[in-house]
Length: 175
Image (cartoon, rainbow, N blue to C red; front, side):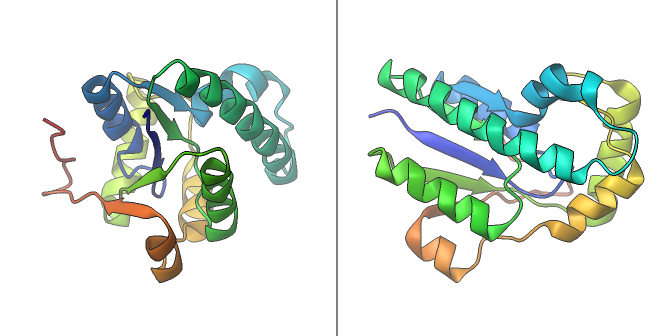
């Protein structure tokens, strides 16, 4: 049976790098919300307070991504979802939706010290390499970091949660 992998963690934790490696190992399909979001909505981003604008579009996009994921799962492909579900409530609700469709979500949680994550994001902003989707300014990094809620005992008891360990800020190999 194909698997649904959720890649979660705060900004700059290495989620994209991990997801790409996992997709390669499982021959699954990596779907990153940030990539879809940037391509679809970046030109329309308001200059002022963008948070309500962002949240509305993110919710619609998650619905669309899940619909697309179900087609992939029916074709026998694993899906590796990097959706930026940084808070308990939406993450639990989404995992229960996955279960309601007959799949058992596997959550992979990545983290790193804030100074390491901030430097990674600044480097990614400058280099615009393979995992770049959009510039993340320091104030957005700080906001997103402050909103991150790691899975608690309830999430860990209800779903399969794997905490990915880093060694000196480098993600582990998936080999």
